[in-house]
Length: 314
Ligand SMILES: [Zn+2]
Image 1 (spheres, rainbow, N blue to C red):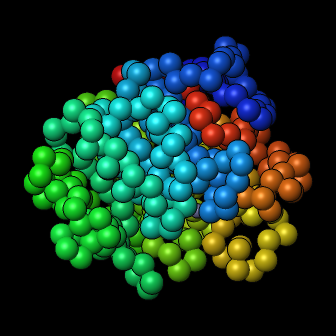
Image 2: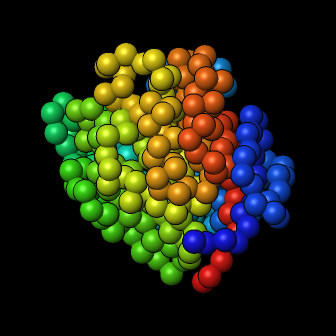
């Protein structure tokens, strides 16, 4: 069991439980050596305070990994101060608009950056109504036929654009898939159940620190518990209340399921994100249900919150 202290940096609604000695709350910055910033804490609804899903991994003051970029989160990306030239990976959990639709906006913005090296991008295999990552990118950027075919240089590195290094990940995988390894961190992915939608969760290990992004999942995957085990930070979707109807519950984990996952995985800090109006209306009830089972730190994300972790053991 890892025991060193964590930094808890968050603004907005922050609910803490089980904090160890030495934890502290500071202003809304991403100045911790290792931090996750929430770009969008909402789901697919247009909301005043929340944009759709998006998260940044900050290391030593640089935003290195982007997980998802749903509607509106591009503006939060701008507000975060992240630089396109610093990005080392874009990791898409699945190809719903609230997770992937601002990608063309980000890439167009990147045209005006100083970046010259290729940009890795990961996403799921396809199935049913859903293209795989390559199909999504071709639909957007293929010359002549793509919606933004004039940006086809992102597919082949022409026209002064940086090439997207595509990595299509098997959404049916029940074993972790290595995605990216650098001197500072490793990224892996695993398939999760989100109804009929091919979907992935991602994990980033920085030294001995572990950060897990659930993406959208319905809580039916026992292998996800192992994937998230001992996470210092688990960013978990919270899209439905306990009384969710059958269709919603087939897509999203109930609060009781979130609690069981966080407890079984011995997660140190659970952050609820991807909130929708229906989950916000029942938030008190949901938090009580989670508290009754899970004893670790618990936060509810707001857009642009930063959750800092102190690196150790490198
Ligand atoms: Zn979603």
